[in-house]
Length: 171
Image 1 (cartoon, rainbow, N blue to C red):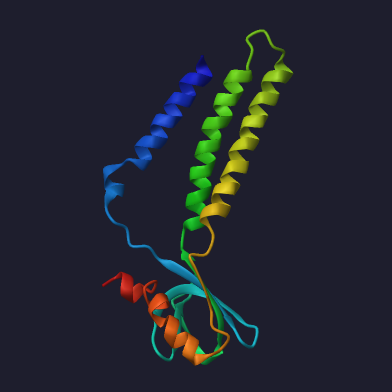
Image 2 (image 1 turned 180 degrees about the vertical axis):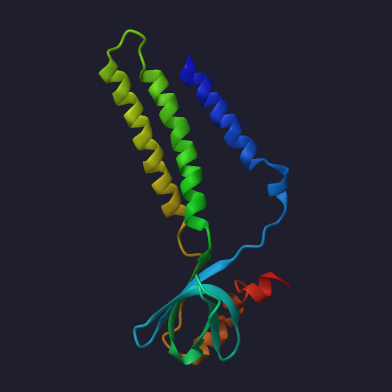
């Protein structure tokens, strides 16, 4: 009885968090980029801006800006900044609900302590596994652009890259 009450309480709290009216406002997403250069270097950071000459990345921990010339770019991978963590929490919430429900269904009033502990541990594992699956599903890259150092390919894909930059989002 207690576990079903706790499950109901948790689910209602989770739903109220996601249905919160303040979260209905449009949030401006920030996109991170991984830029692989033709000489084998990897550049990471927030996609600040892009122009005909190349891409500007803001540092993740500091305020420095890196410039990568268009002729040096092999591949650009773009994804939302918190995509993986959001997916983990949604997946973990769903796994927690499923695990608690499963533990409640398996739980027997007269069962020994080992059976009840096994059901609880199974529910906890289900929580983490579904969290990891949610992170994997939502944490994928939104755009993968293969340029191979060719300026023509960069110019052709510049519009796609620009729509994820901070300059475009803040307009």
